[in-house]
Length: 370
Image (tube, rainbow, N blue to C red; front, side, top):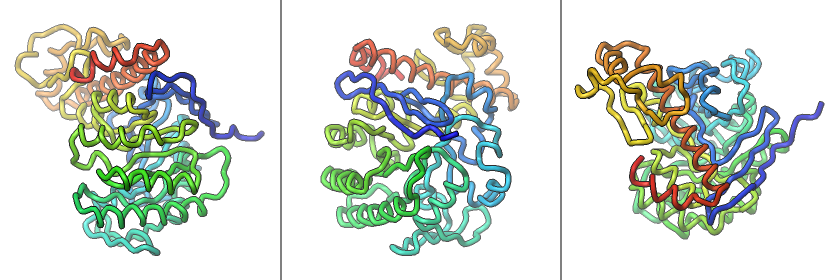
């Protein structure tokens, strides 16, 4: 039986905000969507069944981490990433470029060889070329594959960012050639160019000539302010291809997401809800809650009265405060799940308001609150 071809359908727009549907052979994904991050073949402190109960329809895993541990050949031998981690949701894999920049103990970029770096775990040397990144991601059997790019640190050096952007375009061509034609999988290009408007548009134009199934905006969430990020998106929003999904990589807070949706973004991922959950910070419709705070002792109300997942409202702030202040693992598990659930309820509310034509009012109500 033929596998379903990857496709994107635009269902409704509200100015630049969009509702759509990504079709994959593993299931459909309503957009705008948030992808919980399962960096090392696990969404930390959660089971896949719990993730699905939050309404999550796709997760993200990372090429860099999986190539180091446990190694792609081990995952291939297990039948691919979905079988390895018992996940029947679609999976997007990041190419590893960002982690090479941010995590490796020593790295060198070579135009032809790619990234040459030492593992942050044991110092072992690795070579990650565009072709190797694609080979690994296809071996993992991911459903959405990202091109190999260079993700530079935030810089005001125009020539440095231009050189990096041109290198990413060169690697984009090689990634596309290495990927070939796999109709049931998608290959996304990554727009680079730092905070420079002309370089961002030059990158986008170059990627469109190569022709990808979706377009990601990379090189953000690297230390810039929210206003700087929104300026980049404002510059791009008129030019992003209407019939392809738009993905803002590694972003972000609920406020970041609401503002980016207003500027035409369809897909998001970020470690913030899981990382915050493990350290006692909860996201709620009334703002952020540091559950370890003394004031929540003897507060027997639910963490978020507006939470629609009633099973999460069984646990009081009082009890959660106790779990964190006694270092009980259950506290991290419950708060992580709560945060992922909140993000999915946020995405559902965003989609509903776009469909009803009320997204601008929703944006104005919550942009400074969440």
